[in-house]
Image (cartoon, rainbow, N blue to C red; front, side, top):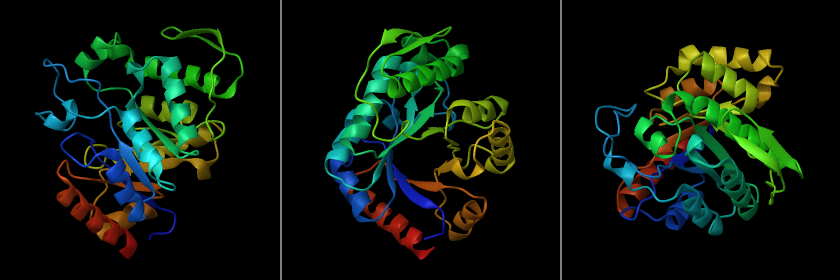
Length: 283
């Protein structure tokens, strides 16, 4: 494999596809570093256009619960890391969010990769009581409150959108101070600042996010915050299946390339995993 770059798989777990435990075993057997599941609580009928095009794929309404699915994956694997790809943080209560992340990290023996996002669907956010314009601020405050719960015996938080009275909460994550936090969102000044302030990396989506033009500013903002440049995680989702393109990502210092698994039955999914694993081994 390319020196310094890991390979993962993202799949939409549904009843009609490979169930999480079966998929996790297949991913681990093929030597992938990580397995990622996305989430949507529901898909309102008046949902606006999604970032990927004019029509929202049918699978977005059928995803299994993210944390339950990852727990099932954790129970049958030993090595593969378990990623939320991504967790829609503003749609979670801070205390429940912190407990679910910490519980998964404990049950998996410290294998969680916490991919987070602000949310793209105004109708879905609204059903959770979050205004679209506030989603970034709610995300920030939820993460800061969760960090307090993960690291302090008695934690509290007082923000504009999130408040937490002095509280105790266990378990604490196995990974210290907490699982790596990777923000999956398009590039821009707000993204640069968020990564530098409260995250551990950026998770751009190839084909949608302009990785080349934003990677430099992300690194500059990170360095300006006094953070170690060697610790910045860059995880590219929807990774290319072209060898030359993967080499370009590796040369750019990308930490991890995550391939998409098809939303399909076991035979098609396993063939896709085999092709991606063969490609990763050939590099």
